[in-house]
Image: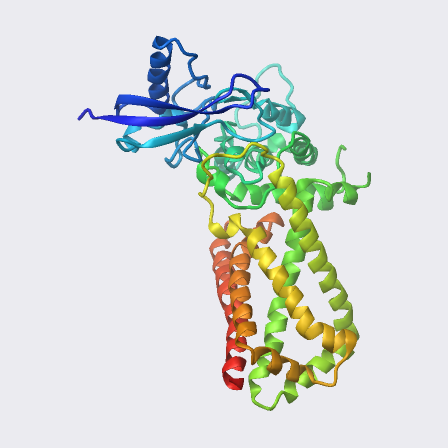
Length: 256
Length: 216
């Protein structure tokens, strides 16, 4: 059942980091409801190119919801209205005929706009470099099951590892906090024996990096978990706070 | 920098202060409410007057009182400071605001400000005459005089409504910040938090309304 809808798009256009930027209104006719949101933007760009205008810049890569490259705040919601969905996996059947859609970049001072809807999320890379890793010696492979990991802990670590680092949590947060991202990364590694050696310094350094990058504080509103395309739950923020307290006040011997 | 100073310089550490002072105030609210129930005794305020006097003369209570004032001041100052710093993390605002999270969690600054205004009025009516400048009237007289005014009573009831909205988010949020939520009894904590946010402010409001109706 192929259906088409007509849309009015209010798209944030900004020619560069220093441009003030503003909304442009575009009318798009006969959009197939089978298209993904990004395909709809491809169609818009084709139309703009035909009109001799500059196409809208937006980020995308795998288009199957696992890479974390796509972003966009659609009608005030990072990755659009659907639960547990990235923008690339959002389809036009979730929009009504005649609807006006606001499309904005992820907004946070720690995520400066590069152009139009593209923001610089390298702050996340720097937080990861500060402590989101484990130390392993490369070389010949170890025997399987050399390091026992209880199944429930492995499952929980995997839940945290689902984070694709897209930054929707920051975009959703009233304080542009990166707590959910840092919580997912810290929890993932602190649940596993492989993450044990750096456990205390990891949480401290990642929180330090998060603050230094200009992300805000966490007020536990839970907007991040609701908008997260992987639905990373609040329990990991609880766990991050607990890891922070443990590293600060309980563990006596730490390496920094 | 030493460990403790460094801990509280982080955003997470600043939130620990908010959560710890907030939890302390949450416990205080229960104590204050239990004391207020003496107003319902119908003994012309004798029990309430005696209770208030015993609180003033109890050294332990006086020490806790200093902690209480400190907690209020720190909670208010840190709350406003964090709110303002949070605002600055997104200088270009969204055209369409995100409303995914609960109203109570997004508006702690609004409900908190109403509670602060309430506290100023509350101290002006009771604490200042009773403890600071001194008065011939008993604490019970002050209560009766204040709540015979319908506007004063209505203001209190409204303030308690905002207190309830503040507490709804405050309880579970403070536990989360202190890392005290637990997967195995999280549901129980949420129920306690909700019951607390409903019944404690309701208790205060009902006592205010009761005294107004009795004096009217």
